[in-house]
Length: 176
Image (cartoon, rainbow, N blue to C red):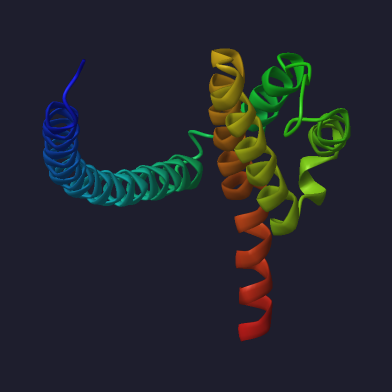
């Protein structure tokens, strides 16, 4: 027969080993959590930098497009050609962000006379581009991500070619 003292010794030994293991694992999980938080903080900072870099790129592109337009190297003809391309390659919607309703609204914007565009129309195109990109990212559809940037580029050109001249005219009329 097994002696009670032997059983108690085995139970105490197992309990001690278990407690030691639990303490050691707790320390390791704490270290992992600290490292994970540090990585998470670095990623947040990196995302901020990427966002600023994207903003710099967009601002530079807009200035460059404005200069091209001012030198008559980018005209309404080129803008209309780009609009036709963006309208022709309009992707078919599939799921939750880029819906049929969004698709139809984008078609309306692209079919609208660009001379009638407002800043709200341009902002709406950019918001739709964001939805399309989000959908492309979540569904791993590169075609949507590529299209979103083409749409943003067209929106930028439309702003420079069709809206800025109207704003400049309004400002000149107000100064008179």
